Image (cartoon, rainbow, N blue to C red; front, side, top):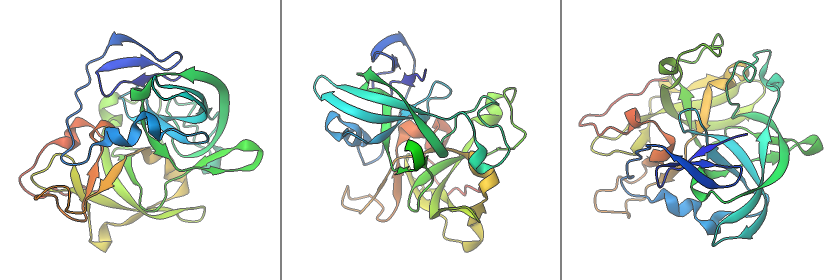
Length: 263
């Protein structure tokens, strides 16, 4: 049963009944401009939405829940069904799930409904499409920001150490997934002087296609906000601000010179 991490108050949340239990130290820095918590308030949840929830590995939003019913908003109480999958056949023979990893792309089934009251366990709404026999399709889409496993290998298994797995690069998806070529992505570069602001690398040579067989190199989607320059006098127009609750602390360090992130 998935469990989530409370990003707002530093507690772990049992998603089976929405009650907080053992304290967990989670230090999520503030974003530079946009308040991402406003995008996941009680009023944000509607029936048939799919929402990403923080996992119990390194706290990134890799679990998915489908909203079945909004019982009340204050206090927050909803009926959800976790999305699950027993195979990764749609991307080839790699037994990603059997190797102990969480699947974030591909085909999912809707689980049994249950009550949830843990607002701070949810990260962001996810775009999905409906397939045959109730299958839920979730795939990277143009304009989305995703974290890629920096050291990903098809040889990863349950013995792959955390220090290898928990390293990420962030990319912008340039074209929707397709069966023949996979997904086209471009790396994001940290904007100097800010904690959570990035921009797309504009060199065409830095763009790359992630083939279907490597789709499990996508760790999780990262909520983002496109800055308009109106947020504050120093807000860089056209840059992307990333949700600090969905990227590791190493990517949130303020730098003084432009830093290149290579996919």
